[in-house]
Length: 325
Ligand SMILES: Cc1cc2nc3c(=O)[nH]c(=O)nc-3n(C[C@H](O)[C@H](O)[C@H](O)COP(=O)(O)OP(=O)(O)OC[C@H]3O[C@@H](n4cnc5c(N)ncnc54)[C@H](O)[C@@H]3O)c2cc1C
Image (cartoon, rainbow, N blue to C red; front, side):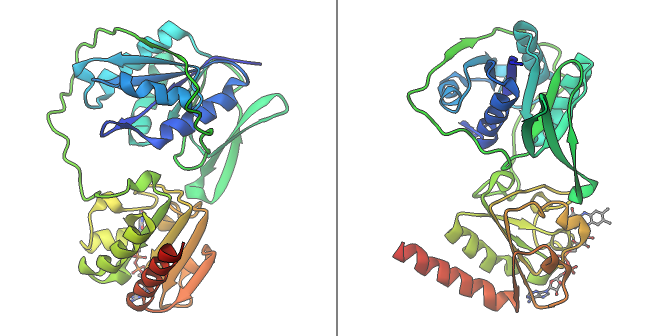
């Protein structure tokens, strides 16, 4: 059965976030040949709309207003609900990002519908759309189907591959005028915490440090490796609690959930709460001087050794590979 799907595009620093393209790919699966309508909300976002069609959206609806320059749940929910009312879709797909996690329950509540959150895979089986999502901090997966009403899913970044970009692909781009009112929050300034470089949630490579880095300066060799590999820095809560780095870098049950292609854990013991945030990474490398460390149980490659010796050696080897490539 084909259906119309509304997908939310996300913008950060004037560019579309990769999760927008992943959500469009998910939307295409859910649409089963029906129409995928992407929504872009912001102050001035229409110049980005065409790229959404290049990644597989059939149409794009923009809602622009100076009051939407920064995300607020009140403002964005008014904008997205107006598009949903105008389009009457059978399904919604958002990214399972900080924004998506905040906005989707509000929208689901307003529409009096359910929500399948944090989806990592979607397949069509037995005539149903089957959503896979992790439960019990990633120790198990459940499969869900929506039997009645609107289908609403959020997709975890880095799990559903975007469709190939086709620069010749175009689609209708329209704007919807929405009277945004009664904002309870006005964002005056956005101050980013220590997240220079690659966005941790969407990074293809993450170099994470634990209490084993021993100090804030102990992150320096990890940063050098991250620079060579084009990766982002992450951390265990142990490292954050010890004040070696900012909590915005924390990965795990009470931190960020990441699914990079390559996760290098340096001086991290592998507590269950840490594994909840990274065990679905595609390739896991663990560097730890304790051969019994729990992290080795989830690692594809384990290096027993002192991270202050191993990490600089890896950096040098990767540099050589890049020069010879
Ligand atoms: C409710 C709750 C929620 C939590 N949420 C999270 C969460 O979201 N994320 C999270 O990470 N934790 C979380 N924790 C904390 C978690 O239980 C662990 O305490 C924490 O992950 C430990 O951090 P760590 O591995 O860096 O430190 P440690 O357990 O102290 O491990 C340090 C490791 O470094 C190794 N090491 C030391 N020196 C070197 C060296 N020179 N070279 C190589 N290896 C070295 C050691 O062998 C050791 O394995 C939570 C705990 C609770 C109770």
